[in-house]
Length: 92
Image 1: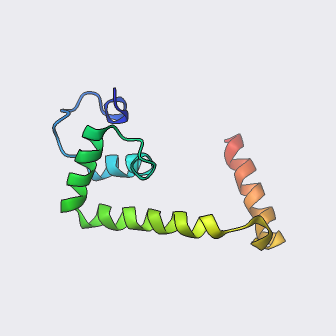
Image 2: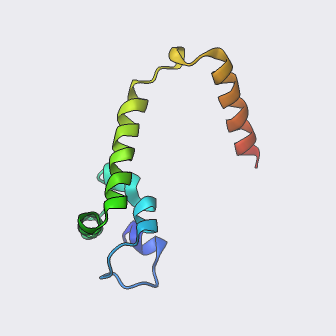
């Protein structure tokens, strides 16, 4: 069973991914974790959707930028704010 089946099991396997499903699966796509059938449908959707194509490119750029960020480059005040935000998020 593919990840697509777990997300929307009641829909036809042959239908083209909706944009919302693309967003849910973009990480799996970039990591090469989609089964071949889902990867092919993902790529078919990209061929006809400028919005999803732009979103995918933004995610690729985010990965590149965050890969260069080092903890010591984060100002202490920003680090404190991030830690508070993450701790409160986890508690919710």
